[in-house]
Length: 238
Length: 189
Length: 189
Image 1 (cartoon, rainbow over the protein chains, first blue to last red):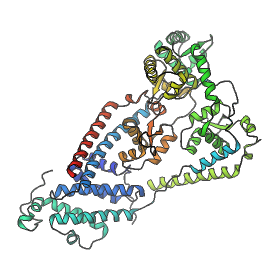
Image 2 (tube, chains in turn purple, cyan, orange):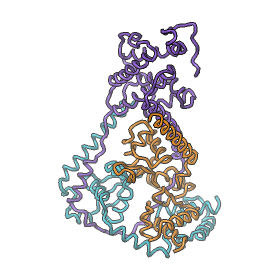
Image 3 (cartoon, rainbow over the protein chains, first blue to last red):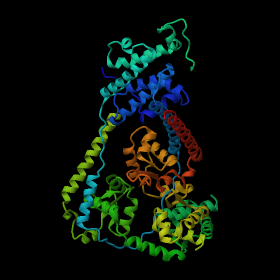
Image 4 (cartoon, helix red, strand yellow):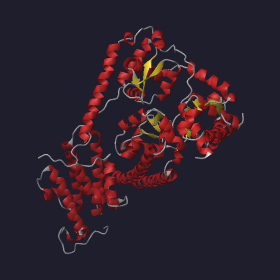
């Protein structure tokens, strides 16, 4: 069944992410990024096509968001120095992008305002001043430069399959570390599901953990995780 | 409109249009009276004391480089015109010869960089000239001058080396670009 | 040569040659020092208040009709100029104006997408130019042109909306980021 859903056009992954944060009137920080992670991934999945060059960027940003979300839910999840750096870098890039995107709006107004027109220099008397470098041969050579440097437009290929695969790969490796952090196998939880569903399942798992976050930290004492417990407390960051 | 404002507008018009403009024309364009115009002109001539002066022959007005700077201007202009037209000049010239007549934006597109300075030099040296675009009166077309062709020893530009091949290739590349552009636009829609 | 004389000569050259002239060229043509030139430029910009203004992109200077006369000149000029720029172009310009000069990869990093097509269009329209990167010869730097500033209606980029505020915030963000980065490195060491 063909779906005719108009998806908004984003300039890129940062644009999409910023859009999600601004929609909720949030500031850029760990907490807001954790909150919009699900929606970001859902939006990426909903996009029918992504230009090949940008797929990697959409996915690597999704990975960073999942790290942020996982850490907010599982404080005992150890992040590597590189991962910490990725998170800091993402926040920095988002803040810079936000500023410049706003400035771009101001520029649009300036472009619509009065401009400064160039002058017309007085034409000197008609003259012909040839140049020794202008010959049939040099002109033919210059034409070759034009042909070789002619603007090429890359076609935008469709890569929806690849996109989900790589997102899945990333989630799988992340799920291993998360499950060891909370001693619950994500494989057990997710079972044998369809590729697309694993992502959904993973996000659902995170939601469950969010509900039982205190229990997860009590894991050592009791030796097991009770996802549905009377002692459920609300996460402290909301 | 006060004096200052009117004299600024006169100055801007003289600057933007280049060449002399008659008082009559100024009055029409600025919708002012003759007296207002004279006042503003006096204002303009008094205020100008820098490198640009306003020359008034009683009927028309024109901006010129001031007499004190004319020797310098002449010297620099000569120097500019005796200089090689350079790679940019050759490329623009070649585009005009093989693919022309072209508008400025078409030349910019083919070269991938802005060519306004380059075209100005080519015009000043009499290598190309501007003709009116029958399709769009607001855009000039550039074509080679007959002097250039005779300098190259050809009567017609199709005698240039591999004229048909180069012209065909450039047309083909452009068509391929346009096609992809429209395809991409469809994908994004 | 005193200030006044030098600034008259600059004005006359800009006027007579038409189009932008680089500071480097002015120094060569006027045989003055860089300091003398800057003083004369300041003088010129302060003195200009009429229908013609001097646009300065940091590298080159160009005379243009003042913003107050824009509508009038547009009416009488026959050339059409489209200033429509897409979002991608506006974002790249904003990065170059407020943060620049920048390399292509720095612009990509800020926007989170590949900007090569966008930059090509901006180059073609003469809104930015490529200059050599003193730190890395393999990468070009992109900087604003007098054409860009003129289309935005400002003589200098510090007249852009909230220029100082945005610059300040960007510097702050960068300082905070660098600090955290170095702390991270220490922790990891």
